[in-house]
Length: 138
Image (cartoon, rainbow, N blue to C red; front, side, top):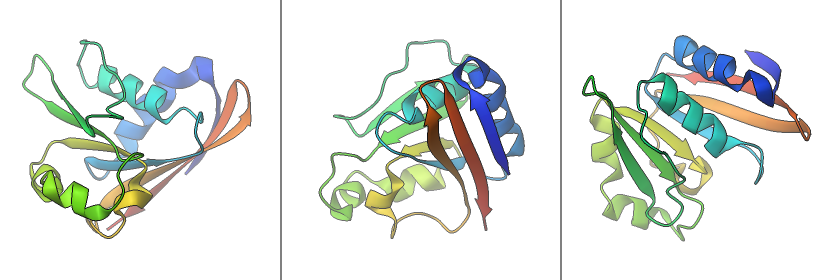
C-alpha cells in the first residue's frame, strides 16, 4: 500500500498504519529528516499515550505505557555499531513481549528482526509532502 500525504495529514496516516497493521512490530525506513520520529510520535498518541515522546537516539529504547496498560517500545538504532549491542539489551525479549515495537533504523539490526513484521518506508517528496509504503512480512 502506498500513500502520498502532506504533513498536515499525519494523524490520518498514523491511524492508517495502525489499522492496516498485521503485526505489532513495525520498522520505519527513510532518510534522515524524512519524518520517522514524527510519525512514530503520532502513532504513540493514537495508541492512547499522552505523555511526551522523544527519540531514543541515545538510550536506544523508550518505553511508554497507556492508561489502558498498553505498552509501546520506541527503538532508535541509528547510533549502534553492531547487532551485538541490540542483543545485549535483550531485543528478542522486547519482540516476544506482545507489545508494540516501533523501530527506527532497522537496517542496523536486520539479522535480529522477526520474520513477521510490518515495514514502513518513507520517501521525501518535498518539504511538506511524503510518500509512504507499507509492506507486510510473515
